Image (cartoon, rainbow, N blue to C red; front, side, top):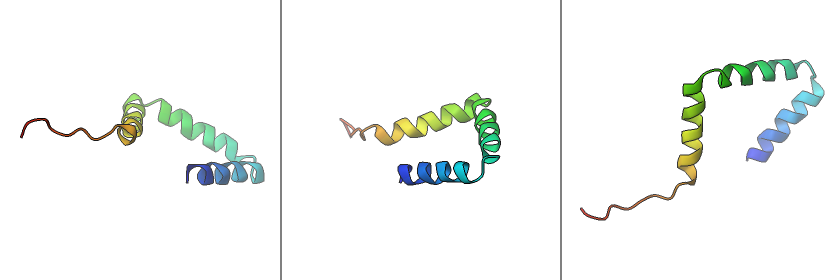
Length: 57
């Protein structure tokens, strides 16, 4: 799914070169907000972490 989205984005950038400026602006705006970056990284890590079972109930 990630590769399909990446391919679609690259296809749009090749078809419409001015979109590159828009993508750069959006990425810069997101990276300028550390809370958003930390939240996104937390979501990415949460998906890869195994679920821990409680030792004592």
